[in-house]
Length: 202
Ligand SMILES: CCCCCCCCCCCC(=O)SCCNC(=O)CCNC(=O)[C@H](O)C(C)(C)COP(=O)(O)OP(=O)(O)OC[C@H]1O[C@@H](n2cnc3c(N)ncnc32)[C@H](O)[C@@H]1OP(=O)(O)O
Picture 1 (cartoon, rainbow, N blue to C red):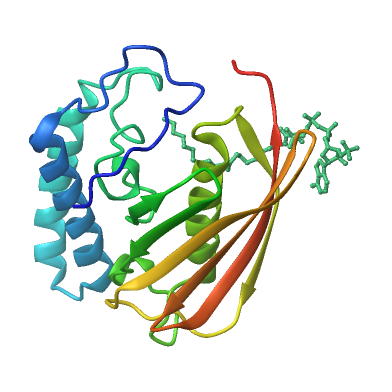
Picture 2 (cartoon, helix red, strand yellow; picture 1 turned 135 degrees about the vertical axis):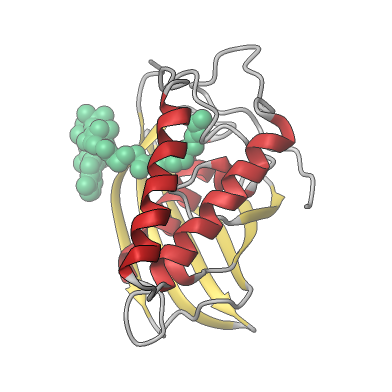
């Protein structure tokens, strides 16, 4: 994993431990992503599915007894893990960061499949909102997505390492326009433009 210096998010409380859960949380997240891929691709006998469903429910119940407030949860704050360590976020890996340019890598897996062997378009939009939104926030005033325009240029494949390039296009007062490209071997598969409007810190 590449270690880079990313500025703090403006809503983070001072002293927030960004390594809560340690390696154990990283393993839990990785295992959970593996489970989602397995469920997305499964065609097993009903008896097997029933048995696994029981096991998964038991495990969820065990974790539910430790549910905390959204300010205290680990998910989304582990910047050292793919996708900020959040199980819903596509597991991209940030590889470089300046105030105007960010690069990252991403590999989509079975859970992200839409149809025809390609990534679901909503998942691509989720990736762009996350990557642009994260870039719009860290080291700047807090900002929210006002719009996100996605161009789907080519089918996006699974199980292939893809590149993400994100840049600040322009700033106009509270408005920050950011663009991003998702590409494979230099071919742009999808690109996006987002408007992020700065708001007061909460
Ligand atoms: C641990 C944590 C890690 C954190 C890491 C985080 C990474 C993930 C981040 C994900 C980011 C998100 O998904 S955020 C969630 C999705 N977004 C939302 O829910 C936002 C909901 N909408 C809003 O809250 C609001 O509409 C705002 C904040 C966007 C804007 O409201 P406002 O502040 O009152 O501003 P307003 O006066 O309306 O507009 C200001 C200027 O922007 C323009 N403007 C506003 N909306 C638009 C628009 N859709 N299209 C064009 N222009 C627009 C206006 O014309 C105006 O231009 P002018 O007259 O000044 O020229």
